[in-house]
Every structure is written in C-alpha cells, then in structure tokens.
Image (cartoon, rainbow, N blue to C red; front, side, top):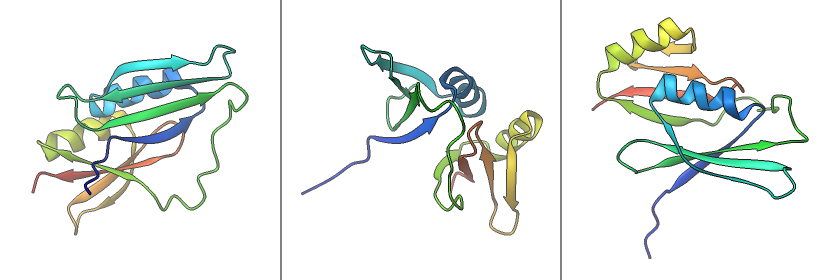
Length: 122
C-alpha cells in the first residue's frame, strides 16, 4: 500500500488576503475553488505551476477572526531553489518571523499566523 500527500489545509480569516500573500511569498496560484451553495464556506486550492503538492485554504463565513493556532508547533516547509533571493524577497515583504542561521533555514508567517519553513535546496 502506498500513500502520497496531495494537499494541506489551512483555515483562513480572509481568503483574498491569504491568496495575495501566498502568491507574493511563494508563487502559489489558485487552481480551483468551491463555495457552498449557502455561502457558508469557500475552499480554494492553490499550488505551483508543475501541479504537484497543493494547499487548501478554507474560509468559513461565520469565523472571520484569526484562528487560535495553539503554540505554533506545526508548519509546512518549502524548498527554495535560490535560498538567498527568497530570503531577500521575504525580508522585503516583512514576513520573516524566525531565523536559524546555524541550521540554514527561516520561517515566514502568513496573515493568519501560520508559520512556513523555507529551506535551501539540498
């Protein structure tokens, strides 16, 4: 039996703000979306041009505030093909929230407080 990851879900308070962030920070673009008939939720899948792994962003109409993320002990990681350029880009965006230079990595924070690890290509 084999399994392969296909998406990770993050609940977001403002879908449009999150879409702008993920496109600007990571180049992820909207692939498809579904809005409930009653408008209670919208699910939007974003991903890279190559069509590999996707993220699912879910906006619940009755939950417009940021989510309680506990102690931020979970995250998703992205590998940057040009780590130095990515670092400069994220620094200019003001979204770097933690750096570990000894390990050669850093984290960025999205509009809802989710941390995303950025790693160099190894």
